[in-house]
Length: 77
Ligand SMILES: [Zn+2]
Image 1 (cartoon, protein in one colour):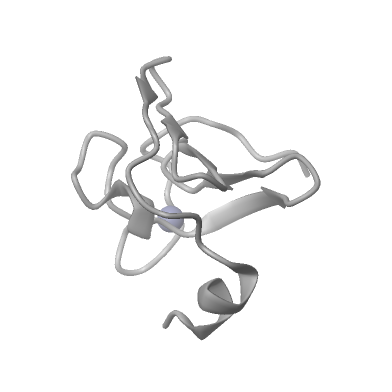
Image 2 (cartoon, helix red, strand yellow):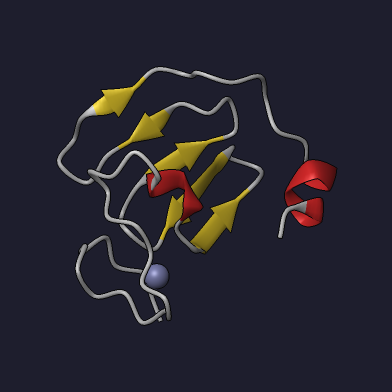
């Protein structure tokens, strides 16, 4: 099954934050392509390994944090 980028169809409880929320990076990842350096979040946000983001409406967010390591991601709750 292919992941969709349609916001508003979150199956999670509690629902993931929407793409226009300041907390959008807390959404569940639904696709991860480490070889390409991105993660697709449940709310349609494309999160890059350098913390840059591409929102569902096409808006690009510049990287704003030091890169997160895979170990740090696994340690996150
Ligand atoms: Zn979700």
